[in-house]
Length: 366
Image (tube, rainbow, N blue to C red; front, side, top):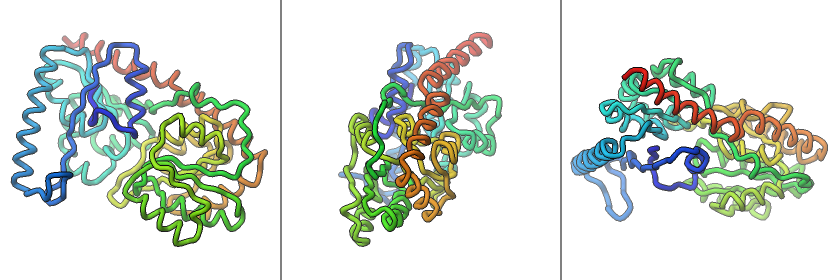
């Protein structure tokens, strides 16, 4: 298994796969991300474009040599590459060593314009040589086809949720608390969520919003809440553990996330936080974006609004806060839907089947 970082608090789905797959898994990190020329890297100061390119070439050559040595000495049965750029940097070495490679796409790697500009041509070559590509939403499946992938190689398998961990039986949902969990970045729409909540307060003055996470837009959101005079109603606890988040879910009434297409084209796959919140029995108010309509049944387990429609989002949130019966009904439906479609009990065996099929097909072709 190859991932871009050794550990990231936003990549819990990769950690879950390492723990959930029964085979012996060796996880490698492949730092493909680069600092664009002219930006400032921590502790290094401004980067000269020519020196930056030379340094990247040397570093990439060293990493490639190390990976080649690993493949030759360890001889893994199959390589699972997390994120498109990771796959784009390892697939050819796997191909030359006759080791099947499977690439998982999650969101930005299939949509963001700068990523597609840098890796688009490599993607098309990669599509031909990898054994399979895993996508987490139907919209992403269609996007990879638009990028040149064969539909026969694309397999839909969402990240999945530990529905036993997120099982919160008999939790009273009476407090007017709203929660959102995610990075403070443009595609998560934190400012839109805050704007919608501001409107909620006009009809539900006792409502509270907890915005869990870190990111470049957090300070802006804190300033917005202060400027609007609603700071007492909004909490920014920062990065939290999954145990802390589960406790917050137990004390919340509604989960909300205003996912949207960012200005650089970045888009969601199927947000794991949406799945986890629904698994706890929280109704979800979100947007018609990416794989969210597959996870949220509009009018049954939550509400979906168009991207940018904060008024409709505010009305949906307020409607749930005002009705205990509706909240309970939607929450029960939300958990049933996640258990039926997005549980580890479905997604982990499917991931194992995909990897086994890649090995089996390679054996047949030898």
